[in-house]
Image 1: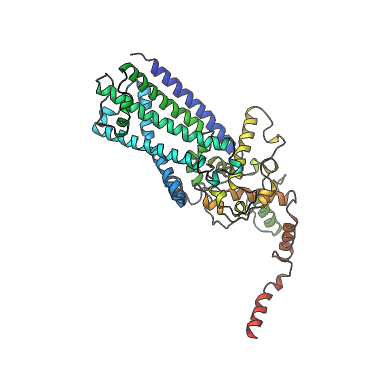
Image 2: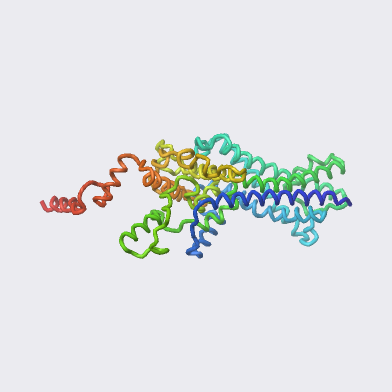
Length: 444
């Protein structure tokens, strides 16, 4: 028997592994463009969050129909990949269905389960294509979803459909050859779904069937390897990043806005209070807030790469619902696009972050971030606990503290906060006058 197929498989497998390693290294470097942030507290709560939200898809089920369809694809992705292990071993050793002799009759049961999941994926992907392109669900047709984002989503769904057809074609032709007693093919105890399409191939000769079965096998395994690489360029990177992203979720109460460490340190020093890291004033004070991706934390950038562009955040955003330009989904897409741009520039020996561009201004406008009401609806809606609000607040801090570029009404409020300790321009001693006035009216 020729070992050329095994050599070809090993070369393809090694090549896919190389490209995947390069891309993962690129993504890791881009994520680490952000500032350091430690989130290792409450490990038990973090594991619980990851298991419920990423693995259990708890937040997906706020919308039951897409959640159920997504669950079918998710379960199929996990379980069918067990069969990929057999593909890889067969490709390396030159065997065919290497697990069949060891599993006996259970192997046929497992194949039927895999085929059922393949059909479930087919139905779900067709349903998602209809939702996007026929029903035109509003959140999939926002301005930021034009062009590549829409094509990317459709392309993934079409690829998944083709890969599932490849599985069914491979099994159907394989079982016809086994029934005819062709050497090397194992007769299974009936495969419900692929048996239904066998009539399409019954009139073909053995040589043609072998060619079709081998083509479907190669197409499926090479397609999976290519898909694994493509995913790292796609919004579907959330398949893998959802797990670390939920583990590193912000566990603080949703209404709590984090203080700026730089400001806290300065205030503590002025008040003579202990300062973490000593009382020494740094030679150069860091930037207040965020202007570019390197001013954000690495968690913020990982959030951006974890975004699946589902638009649940934008569909819940009160600012967006009232016609404002703010879209939390676009904020995450812009952070990811900027990180990609900087990363590619660095790899090509370019200026990187010093290219004259910045996240704020060239990607995200002040009008967008000023429209945010800080309500946390986007954070609550996200199926994988992405936090667009954190990024918005950091950019607003930069505009306020570095550029003094906030709207005039905001500046008046800030001044009142500094002088009167409230947004309104009256003395702190008059704060409860309304209560006294109400009491006097009640006693009249």
